Amino acid sequence: MADEAVESGASLIKACDIIQVSTRTIQRYRKEGEIKADGRIAAGATKVPANKFSEEEKQTILNVVNQPEFANLSPNQIVPILADRGEYIGSESTIYRVLRENKQLAHRGKAKAATNNKTEPIEVSRPNEVWSWDITYLPSLIKGIHFYLYMIIDIYSRKVVGWEVYEAESADYAAKTISLAYSNEKVFGKSLILHSDNGSPMKGATMLGTLQNLGVVPSFSRPSVSNDNPFSEAAFKTLKYCPIFPDKPFESVDLAREWTSEFVNWYNEIHKHSAIKFVSPGQRHRCEDIEILANRAKVYEEAKSKNPHRWSKNCRNWLQIGVVPFKSLRIYKKKEIKPSKTG
Image (tube, rainbow, N blue to C red):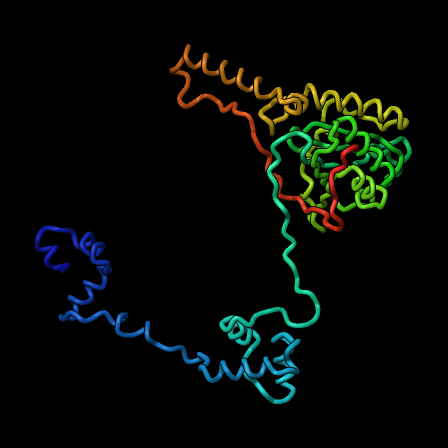
């Protein structure tokens, strides 16, 4: 077929591409003076590996591992025991493979099987649906002693919905902070999730009891996962690297509270947050961002209509961010928590 194509004026390379044969193969056939059948078809695919276990050997493995004395042991434990008896039925990987083929690869023993600690993803679509909170240090004049800033962030709007500065870390202070934020935001009777890390103030009895009474569902970061609370960590970075953060330590807890109040006002009402299309968290929390972004889009459309040659593509996307995906939730399910009607 390749020769016929070449005689008709086609390129040998193009002809070989169509029949999926290498040009070197054609050249080798011509050099040998005869056309041979492709040896890859006759052999290779039907060749049986020399080390393949027969069906009888696989059945022997199943018979052994299903004996009562091995019922609670893994292949990693069975193989050494058999070796001590002078027996060998296969390697650990072979036994695992045979068990898998026969759908017998289940957890063996009384201990609970290891679980995949997956998080429960959620799409936050309104204010006061999911909050995130954490504690950070504020420096004091005494080396080694700090003030502690408790701060609660609304994940949807990024607004600081609650904060307080104390001289210590405790579940009691955390409970007071969340209770005040809950009251100020008027969340009574609504479903609310509060996410945090696994610190002792977050899991203290007073804190969990307060959340139970308020009807707030607690969520915690996965153990040893440092990036499961990104919203609070991002807010703290903004706080400590903003231009108004003082260069010197705070002289007292009252001065720390005074400065934090100024920062929260700036952050909520003046700061244009990049993750929410550069509106302030307060504007998004009050749903004012819809009109603001629509006006921005109108300005861009008018600018494009006046000078269309300056726009090679569509105008900037000023559509509101409808939902905020949050994949780090690990809901605390120790008890069923129902919303409180009275708060």
